[in-house]
Image (cartoon, rainbow, N blue to C red; front, side, top):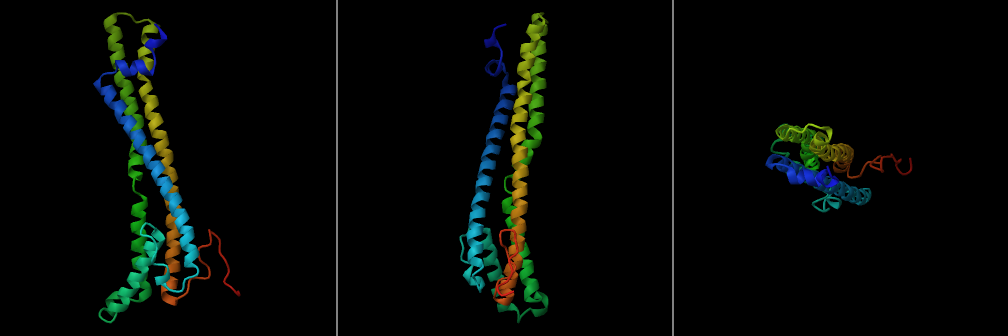
Length: 238
């Protein structure tokens, strides 16, 4: 048995329609997962830069209008606009439904909580795809291996040659499917875990920013203990 009759290229050439379909499916899944991981990580990097610039401007603001004019793609600016719109809506309609609407603080809290949940939905885009690829790709590869071994053993039985050199090649080629399944699944799982952690951190910062927005809307001044890159800064003159 020559070296040219073994390996990945020989397996592709000898594979039937089902094995080729599985190979194409795994290649598409691998490409989709890598594109999703790259796109989402780039998006998180952009959000971090926008967040730092926005928060620097927010700390100098005294009204919601000063920070609510940010870019539409910025979750911090979207949350500030939501607080501004909710505050304006409350003041316009509070005389009509005072008891039903509750106090301004309660009304703003509900509005900001809804806005943060909408941001969470945006951040989770693509995570279901990564989780699905990471959980199913090994089984798809295993199925391709079983299918390949079955056809290899049938071919060996029909040829009547059951020596080791006749068995090792086809069976080894079939195991390529399992290796490809793992190669597709591992990056998808690692990417899913990394993005889930980044989403959790970003949502925590948005939640803290929501409290700062509530203080700004109610008092006309930002909190003395606000977002400071994860640390607390004492108020001036304290």
